[in-house]
Image (cartoon, rainbow, N blue to C red; front, side):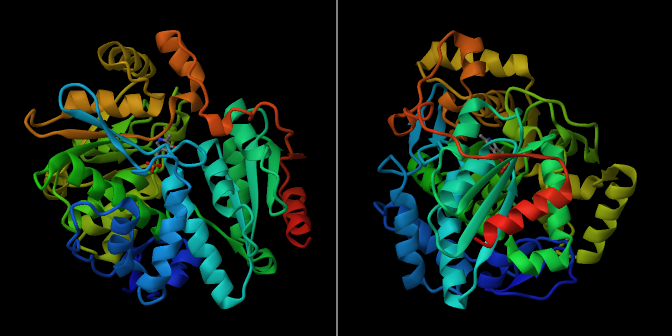
Length: 459
Ligand SMILES: *Cc1c(COP(=O)(O)O)cnc(C)c1O
């Protein structure tokens, strides 16, 4: 498999380079030059077995199936459910795909538990070391830390905005006691943290000096790993017949993985893009116009995003893989904050995608409604997806799978506001509030932050 950039002006690479590089040199995103077809799978194949079969075509020739298989086994052995990503019924032939059985109880573990191992393997093979620097508003930081902890070829530095992440989220990061894990509370906002990381990447001397690398959601390896549960869930629920999916969406990585699963032959009839009030994608799907309105905070903070980077991969396909047209559209959007898709492309998108936006009130109402009807407690992100599924489902005879992207205990305030119950953390996190925290607090000053990253990575 070879990978090309959506902007057409970066070297064609194999998997190992795409993994470590993340973003392409021309600012584009790497995509496979062709999509493989779904392999034959035994009816009783385990999650890890399906994952290896599906992912091996993407990792060859950098990484062969025999090397990939043990990493996949190990990654999914960290999940606390034998099915890894189990499916449970709700009401009305809706189903929940539970993606929160990994170490940090949110769906980013599904990709990152594997990606951490892939990084370590590739770096060991090259006899190199890397420093991962991550900016987080909550979930990504802890999932990346769990992916990297104790791996000898990796150091990880996570910047979070001081006082602006929830106690559970902060403690999931700062109570990890490993010499290669470094947390920084930046006296600023999430955007300040992200700008600092971007500035570090933009400094070639610094980048080389510390071996700077990223595991962010534009990394192809993350998208690839997320395609697997669409296939396993469709097999469980649809048994060969088409199913729909509803996906709580922020950066578009998760729902794009659904599109890839469909492209490779998984029978998916509908993909509902579920947004909170930050609805740039749902407006784009409804009227073909992508236009910025600014970000507002909601009960589902991991979806409070305006620029959904992974949408570029879908745009590339809509423009028949013509990078010149992609670059044109992106420049127009950057210059004017607005871009139109055109009727022909809108109808292509509309074949499978629908969008729905759910506000905070609707989110709490859905947590209540589902709890009263089924006894199941949804987290606010999942509730956005379930509500959107009820609103946008095209065919009552086709089952619909709603992606449950976080455990309700990760967002106890919203759940309590909805149903008066404070969900308890699972047993493996029960001592989270007793463990000591380790982090530095630093001013929002790029030179100070760089000096800190340099000092911890040279230890
Ligand atoms: C990251 C995240 C999302 C959004 O996923 P994208 O791939 O960015 O669209 C939704 N829910 C939760 C709980 C998340 O952590």
